[in-house]
Image 1 (spheres, rainbow, N blue to C red):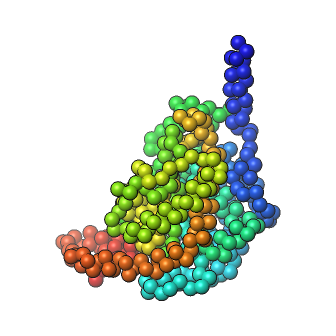
Image 2: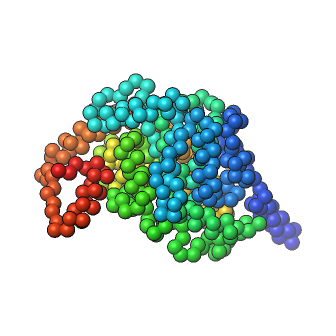
Image 3: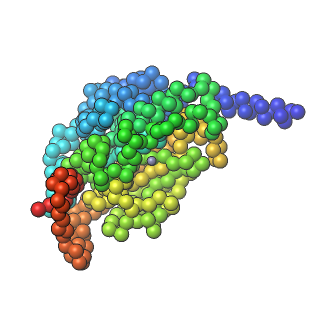
Length: 418
Ligand SMILES: [Zn+2]
């Protein structure tokens, strides 16, 4: 009887732990450093701490506008509109000096990739951090607000090193329409005392769910076909900036842990240079160390491939960058039972924050190797083409419109057409 009583007390305390009113401190997610008080925290802007509710896209966009206005380290660019008229945003984050010189930096990276020039002294690397292309994989876009705040307000040697050595192109929400649909669902089915039973309505969105964009396209298959405005806008930017590293933050099944590339070796695209996979592995050591430091479980080189260039983490491999996929086990809503115990939304966000920061640390530490990889990329690709029997393709069609559409697609990928 006494035993049963203790179990009941224990269960009640677990429930209390996850009551809605609980608010985790900022230090749960971010390094405990000094922050510029002139820059509003996500909580000050939203009126709740990250992880308590799912941020809607309009809240996310509002916070990035605030950062743009308050910080000289952040510049916000709108690169398009979704079908539902939501802005597609890219936050360019770096030191104020680099932001002033961003056209020069773009040119330096273009020269590095196409003329094979050696990297310039003090040239910053370009890192692209993209979150939640599948709208119902919410830890990514919720983490983006914290990572942006850390870079905009952080006062530490580590933050300065990142800002001095990198231009970060942060796409805080790759699928605004899907995120709006999903966040509305989970927020409206949240209970005052969180319900973690996997059959709860909170975890079972009605069709079509938040994964897709307005027209139910899976945009993580659209990076080659470019049928959607979201994909067209970001591929244009990618060819403008030529990033060195691109990360793509996703979620997977609730009973899993955390995955980062390299993926399963048999799923590597043979057209991607081997050095790319080696570099991915080097970067992976930084993620492993960071996740070890907070006691999070993870795995690598298993089940996720790096083959189809129409995916966000593989497309960059075809244009001289290193693309990296992250997959976090999904709480889907606010708290869900899993085979590893209760999986809370804040915990999933924390893992995405930690690996965002380890990506930055890796990029700064491996900068010279990454820039060298980029400067040799074209030479390596051309020598590979020399060994191919097919040198070019000739194509024609009776349908002028089809020809026009096809040529337009090739040109968007900067493929030469004559
Ligand atoms: Zn996904």
